[in-house]
Amino acid sequence: MWMWMILGLTLVALPPFLYFVARRSEEDTLRDWELVLTHKGHEHLEAVRSYTKTELALLDWTYERAREAEHLGRSQEALRLLDTGCRLIEAYCPGWTRSLAAMSVLSRMVSAMAIVRPLTPKAFSLRELAQLARLNQFVHQFLLTTSERFRLKLYILARAFGTLLRVVVRSTAHLKARAAEPNWETVESARRDVHTLSDESIETFRLLLTSFEAERQASRSL
Image (cartoon, rainbow, N blue to C red; front, side, top):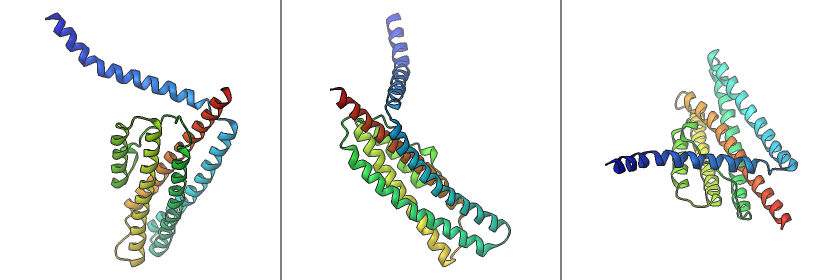
């Protein structure tokens, strides 16, 4: 009887223990990869971050002015500013979609890819993007290599930018048709999510740079 009790306790305790060990191992591996990125790599990464920050700052400023105009009762001005903000997102998304496609091609030139984490559904405000994040988490578990998981995330991010673009295009069309009052909640959700997608895309770029540098250092040591 004692044997069965001990076996039962072991089966209950084993999954959390294995999860803890796996997470600890993953964290250690991530720290090792962090040390690989060179000064030049950091410069490239900061250049992308700076450009993205500037683009999103303009978007945020436009949206805030639109909300301000709406509160002051200047509806026409608010609509024009909101339309400009939507157009900024429309112009912004395709650039990242192309960059993600290029990263996918480049990742095939790396034999060992750094660990990548899937998107988190709760990080997104738009339902469509949260669903894509859930898909990323689900399929992520069935892929065996970090390279496959990396390219999966790139694919999901590209799909997410495309989905966001369609949401914004519909909002812009409604604004032009004056068919209804602006859906401020949707626009605000899109604004938040474009920030999240940008952060995640920059992180994938960092992982790609790190992986290339790790392979270069490994080839030198041979």
